[in-house]
Length: 288
Image (cartoon, rainbow, N blue to C red; front, side, top):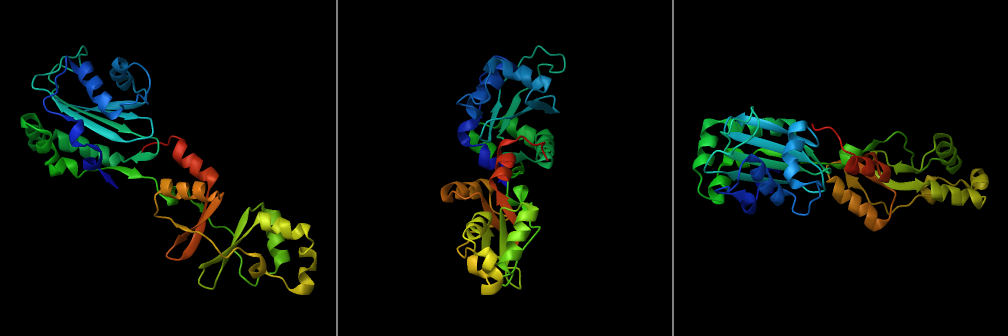
């Protein structure tokens, strides 16, 4: 779980925020959370984008506080500024009393927690925290506000979020011809070989099954008594369902493997495939 303190660094806190109005203040904070311009477009237009719901949204915890949330890019960052004077705004619903600006950018690879956003709005809207922000003289004073800094705001994707549940498993003594038949009928790219306690002992891949078939070994399996034990790969790298998805994806890239077995307390519960990783990391999901 990522707390606000992890993404709101001292360098991204402006005390005081010297801006010529609300739009200029948003532009200044945006330069801090998106220094390379991943969000695209004219920085001066991003306030209008937020207001229209284009890639983000706006919250107003109090008449003097403003929260803008962007989604996009590959990183997650926050910036906060407190102006010594109210920031002018041309909109009727922004009456010129706003002094506290908070900007949050959520990357596509992370999940913004609805509960975290609600907590952020409630904490920034509390008289104690708002008063402390308005009177803060340094970034250190802002970061000392534990009620604000300890908010769990962002959840990293875990392996469980892209897990393909285990549907079929075989045992070491499963006859090889049955293994091949199951893979052919169900279109399986791999089958885990498990022990009595469902612990992973090895994996039989479709590639290995095909190689054995082409060599004609499968046709002789009845006579020689070949089983899954004879052809399974015993060197199996597994990941746990609690591991960060990005870390597991990097393992897949480094090992050039199409899938990884996923275990829970030593018991295999499914596979992590390249396709599932791509969907989870690079397809934008609803917040939750």
